[in-house]
Image 1 (tube, rainbow, N blue to C red):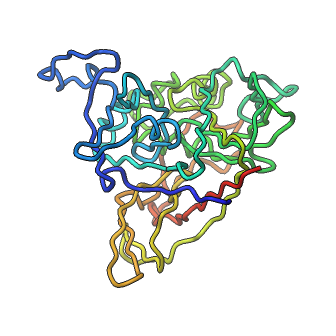
Image 2 (cartoon, rainbow, N blue to C red):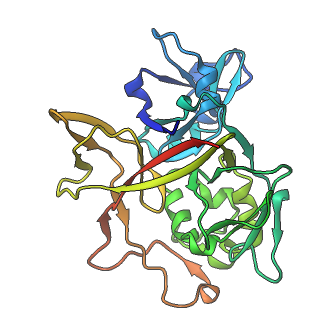
Image 3 (tube, helix red, strand yellow):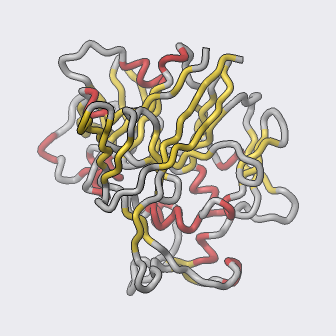
Length: 327
């Protein structure tokens, strides 16, 4: 029987979150002013009996629009490394994408730079081969928290264990600038930043194999497999609204909402009249970047210049229905 993945805002489902340090049962809460002391987030659901192992094994959690791996230890659930994005963003939302109705555990494999190899003379930006140590069935790639699905010309198979990834066709530089709102991505990838203009970065380093290796090594770059099931997706575009952050939909929304440069948009739903829902989100503006008209290989520096007279636009987001069918 085909089942549909379901999305919910974690707070609406009764989940609570605490800043902690994974592996430490005793820590000084008075030192919480320095969030480096508490780099991880613990997920709880007080007052509701919940098997948190299912949240770990059958769900994906998004933090401020980006999926993260979870850790289940001693019947406690954690999101390792999630504090940094919460401190950077200061407008925090956590979502749950549930595949529980399949009654199968997801298989999540952390990406590492050792999985990467070249295709001829191509650099990793233009074409990189990603190889796993096992056969991969139907899957979804998560790169720095962005969900990427199999599609010819973008992410496609060349064997049972290997895929080709075309970052040059996935708005790589746009994604870096979008990420920079939620984490110190330029520091993490060791991309030099101008001391005068903190949005100006070295284009050659940003496009280098070394930077992409670091992107793959991030704590929220991983592969998700759906054992025993095939995956199909369907886009449902939103009814445009003149009120930023609000859209209407005729049926109760239960799907993943994507927007921007491909990130998750956490949302809250409210039934205004019978059968008609309003979707609220704080993440519905998108920068209209203007990098350069030159070929990317000729660009020495990037900054976040935007189109004059049209600096922002409302996200043309869409709900992504995800269907899993037993093989």
